[in-house]
Amino acid sequence: MSKNKIKLSPCPVCGSRPMMIEANRAGEIYCKIMCQSCGAAVPFMHSQEEAADAWNRRV
Ligand SMILES: [Zn+2]
Image (cartoon, rainbow, N blue to C red; front, side, top):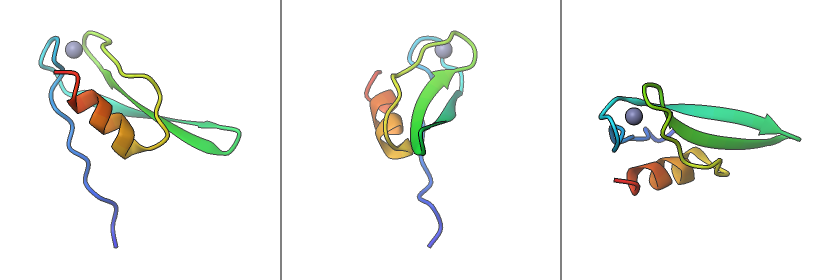
């Protein structure tokens, strides 16, 4: 099984493509989504799915 493809909506502010940022803190992975153009972002979440979900609901 490959990873689910995560779909990210364009930035609600400027319409640019967001990027996924992953951080590893004390062995735990945290993800957030951030717009490369305007810096709009959602807070760090515990999984890519949660981060993507939070981002996609920002619209
Ligand atoms: Zn933006």
